[in-house]
Length: 102
Image (cartoon, rainbow, N blue to C red; front, side):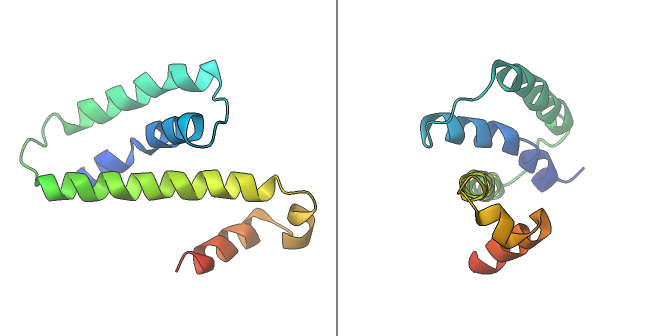
């Protein structure tokens, strides 16, 4: 398993922390209780990956942070009244936010 995939697996933790403390959204207890399982899996997967570059870790964490921002912004976007009717489907929403991300 590549190091990038291991670190990207911790994205739900980034999303929960960002949602709770930056966006002020309440994260359910069930989600908080699932996070240690996810983080434990990341730790188990990375036990053999002791040889890594710190710059790779920092880059992957920054990618997780931006993915968490994108997820929270998408959630906020789709809660806008009438917007989901205009966009049509989740696929259209994903395409639109991906294109606008550049």
